[in-house]
Length: 226
Image (cartoon, rainbow, N blue to C red; front, top):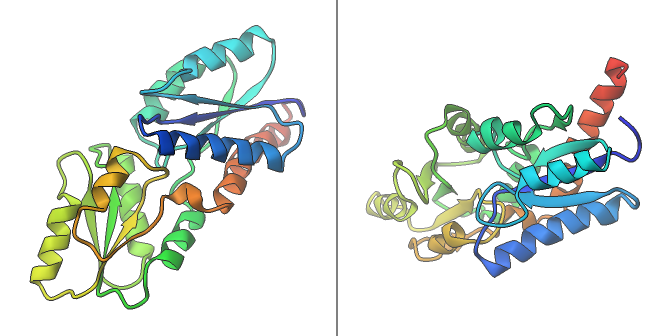
């Protein structure tokens, strides 16, 4: 790949104005860190432009690209939506942003040290890779950690918080494993916890993580002699 390779950043998409701004700022922050890098933001759901449209535009320009999923696991959107969008293009797709130590450090810094219990809150999914990823994150957090979900079939965050209270936890923290604000994040503030950590994208280190995911594919290409 050439030094002019485009970074196609693919987010989920949200109807939340705050969440939209946060994801746009994440992409813009990555671009500011790498002057001259063409960063194009797109989505797999809810918002436009869709990833297939941006991929088609880059192909029409005769340019090369690396797709970086601004997602927290290698679930359906990566394996199906993004994979279908890049099929036949030769574009590489990096690993999603999570799990990664950047997010673990963010959660550790923002969860109070005196919390009796932590609820690791995430969007639910039946995808086994997603489930494995969230369990990996939970295993790395200190103290008592329970899983709670904002959607899907798993235990809801509010129910987990209530159970922890019944079991004697005086101070409960919700560790929000969500990249940006949106409907799922807003529900956490009514779950009854004492503390809710900020969305992950608030951490400036996430923009550097985006670039590392991009660079990993550039280096892989160079190393393979392509």
